[in-house]
Length: 291
Image 1 (tube, rainbow, N blue to C red):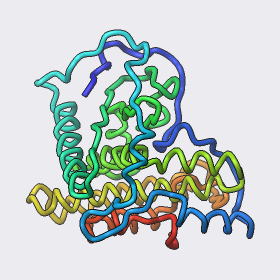
Image 2 (image 1 turned 180 degrees about the vertical axis):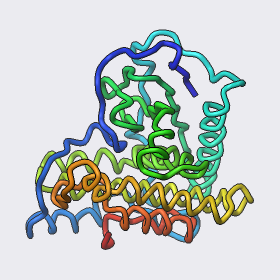
Image 3 (image 1 turned 60 degrees about the vertical axis):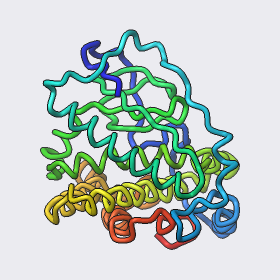
């Protein structure tokens, strides 16, 4: 984990949601778009098999390459006396341990993501990053960017507090890292550029799969005795709180489904719950199932 909080803001802005390289915008999915979407069943990497999945994805890892540090000055490790930073660090370690095991059982090698803690703004392999946009994952440098003040906002603005609500946010972003390793991010970006009308639909499906992947880790944490029933409810509340419909209703007073990029409160909670209940990434195929 890289701690840049002592550096202060460096200026700029970013994009919340995790897949910052994917162009976002309005647009529904017509008949032609649905045909292309069905092709994702065959084109996108799939989570297959009962042994941990990913059986046909070995070649996808060849496309992955992590970038080096991106002009952010010196970084330091998390202060041992910083409880929030240490919590994030411990959660990240447990999440990546779980994914390392899942990949190993599928005959693949998991590459760790790094979390960059920052305050205000910083730089990333995907451009400037700002706390105003929330946590995100950058495929360009395989790093998760997190201003820990988001946890406070999650509780105060969205009413979703608690340890597992915070852990869910980190696990969701690690889910985007998993998608990057498997080539899913790159394929979604390619298809979105070929047919811009698919951008929002694909973005929603990508985000819901990351929610499901977060639940897959949650299941392993629950089995290890780390989570209690109350923790699960915290995660559900967090997923619902940051649904597109909830955010739009609270900020603009209206809901525009055609502009959704992350999914509704119900969709996000449903896919997080799916991962928690099944505990296997095979269940997270949001690209060939109704969402």
